[in-house]
Image (cartoon, rainbow, N blue to C red):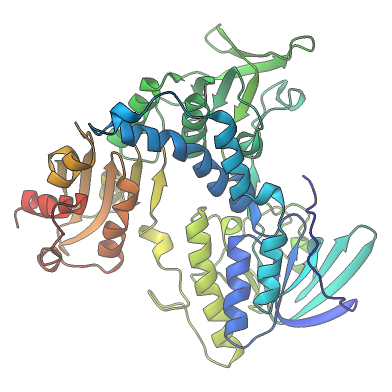
Length: 488
């Protein structure tokens, strides 16, 4: 991991500086916590050992979507008569990579650091570690600065890729999501180990840029936590783009040939797969190692349990918070930012003498973490979901009714793309007559899922939702068709 380079001025802090709030981690979650508490009248400092802006800005959401978008734009153009005739060739690799690099500011964080300063938030560069109640020691080179929090320390240091215990893996310079989103050249062949969101998106991105991609999936299919039809259609789209997907296989060992650089994966079915690069996309874990949790009575690598205000419940005094990937509630950037808003509201309210108990849907409670988490997979086709799947709803004991509809039968969809193929599934709690889950697959559905999120969060009765009239001929007319199929 490289340390960031920045020309932004940083404050000269004493060795025991005191703030109302000390935030460890300057990713999207940490930035939002600090911004919100400062706007509420408190002082804040952010501690960051790498780049201000965090994983999402440089190695995850932003560069991955920058890599995926050009091929998606070409596919959308080719799906419309009159436009497809003007489209020739494939994505320009150098232009795609240059655009990606522009979005991540060439891995420099000057602009993000300057934003912190403009927002009235101090920045201390270095690795933060708890050393006592409300105290964080920050190590940078040979110097250590101690920061004290009057009200709260908030841990927002995110997660890192997990490497499975595959013999030989440590010696082949395997890619993780970091290398996959920042690589400067297209490998002739790429093996992707894992069938989750990162694996699917990176397989789609590098295949579109010319790599021969093989996915190795231990389970029986992709996206195991999604509705089965969504996983099946994403797999069909990847195969249609030339990606080979091998399910039900395990990697027994890997080795890289020194003379050629070729990686060979030896599988449990006796076969082998060769590639120039090998991407491990098998999950992530919170970055708690070396954080000093043991100095405040917590297990050094244990899970941090938090309430809906993101306050760590294992610390009785109530000064320690953990928001974003580190608490493992909803490890998505947008949910980390949502938790940050709730967490900051709770800290500010308590600092001003209010109880701020995290009652459902209060401004200081991240209630949506439980059953209203939206997510989009930017493959071709896109898949988008929020809330519970049918299986999850039934396991929760809900009286479920399912409504499905082919999105291509909506007038707006047929205008959006010739021969539009897509599918929608709505999960309804019959006892309350409200939507509790929605999954969509098809071009552009990522822009449709927020309507379902609003319906779930607002617990809008279907009879009232029927009065939310979609504009014609927009793809959102899908909602009317779903409600009609329900019987309204």
